[in-house]
Length: 126
Image 1 (cartoon, rainbow, N blue to C red):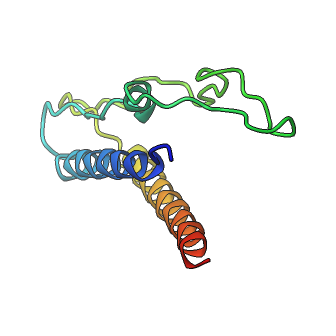
Image 2 (cartoon, helix red, strand yellow; image 1 turned 135 degrees about the vertical axis):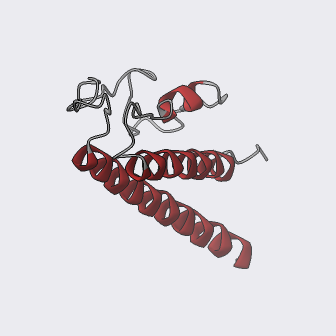
Image 3 (tube, rainbow, N blue to C red; image 1 turned 180 degrees about the vertical axis):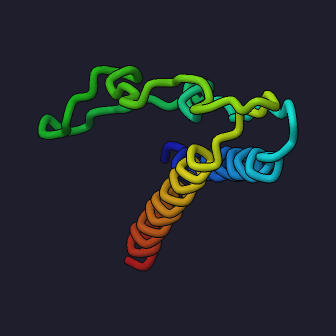
């Protein structure tokens, strides 16, 4: 039996989401601090690229993917939305959007793990 990497991958994603949420919270907390520059963590795709995972097609009816760069980021990676007179580059609206992304990604990750756990338990019971 080959090792199952999904749980390790979900754990890495959860750790990354926790770090991103802490960064977003720090940015919001410093929204009125003069000279504070908004921060963000590296994209999870960089973490994923360091993981030794590859897609394997075990059936001719599986969908084919063109490699790790098949999905492009649709949103441009520009700087902060606004910079105030005090040099603060935190946009509260932008940070709230990031917090929403973290929440959505966390829900997706936990639902995938729950589904995978259910599949494993159904196999073990039989």
